[in-house]
Image 1 (tube, rainbow, N blue to C red):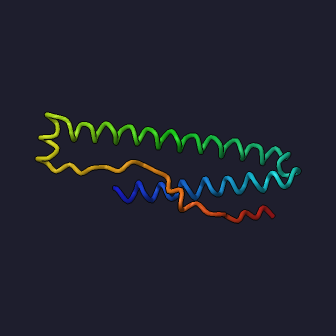
Image 2: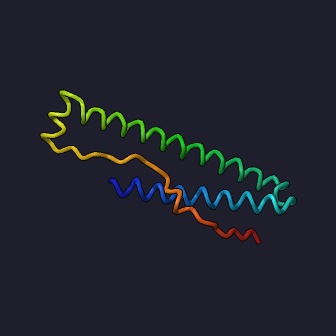
Image 3: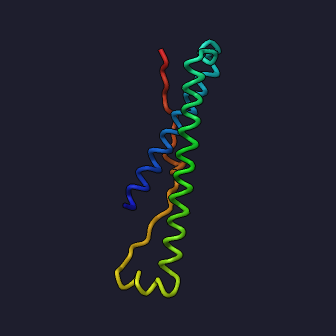
Length: 105
């Protein structure tokens, strides 16, 4: 479970890097930027990024609630008796972001 959050963070970083590269390419090619299908793609990608950000915030809120319950009396007694594990926050790994080549030919 902990590595799943890290793997998803890495995937999110890669997606964000790819989107930035895609939009940079679009800036260099005005005819591509003017195409209706590309504008539709940009809108869909922006919506996807918003959904990912919302899901990350929701997950982190649940982790905060869980960790608070794990460390607060009387629930900490049950949590320690059953050895409930801690959960990491979902954080995108900024260091894993790199330049991604986008070829739209």
